[in-house]
Image (tube, rainbow, N blue to C red; front, side):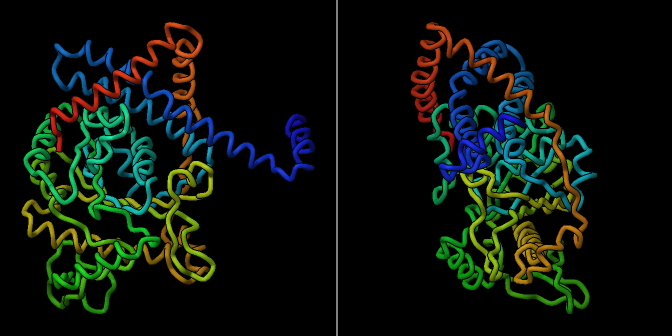
Length: 408
């Protein structure tokens, strides 16, 4: 306390706030550490990969999931623990996250932080290591991590040149009943980003050009999730106000090949507080750098658990079902993006949100582990050489492996 007061007095004549210094110091430390431990992480993974070569695939995946969880906890140490962001959960979150199940996780997409929200949810559900993503192919270019994501069970897809056969091959690996999985899909395909209105306009035009419609009950605002117009039902045009039109092909392939593996579909809607300005206009959601700098104070996460028995298997049925699902997500989003400041301020009470606290040790333990792991790499000559070799040869080798395998 005395030290803080002394620092404040020292910085005050310079016009510098102590909290600002703390924020940027944590940002610098987090950025350096999360990127810098990549070669060290690769070294640990290579040891486990070598040990598990003669063992069944699920044994390798069990150990790899432990390693993945360890690293993602380090990420959350900086992105949640250090930023002190408040996480508010809604819907079926409390009950769903008590279950230990394999899940198809469908979420809206508006920020580069969205994958971290999946981390936050999965950690609270005890399934952080089981996260796997359907990812755009350009992420293969990330040094070291590009290869590792594929080895972990993530699936790369190429926009505009979608290779169905290669995606199916990746899905077949996940069919192993001994490999628990949370498979993350963002059906919109790209981010809903008001800063690039052309993308939003193209989505709206697509809905018009294809005469996309949803089934809804008369005099109600909630779409029929089943995608069927029953007695007294009507149809309305699918022009979404807060989402892009969802793409069905990737989601359908996943449900077709892994329908019997998954216990449930988690319909996840994420809302970053502070994206609506004082005049009620929605702006851009915070991106990675802004989030790590603590500029987002609260995240709202709504989860609806849908048993897989309610998710259609056929492509056309799933398309109608998915469109209706996104119409419902759009109605939910109205609470968070309303022009009425009072409605936005009371949304937590209105929808029954519960603040979810994360125990300090759940992320601090990983920070301590990776700090200790870094010591021999930083403090010994052999460690320096090993680090550089892992960085250089690991990067070149992973790029070559991905190019030869042509994974997407």
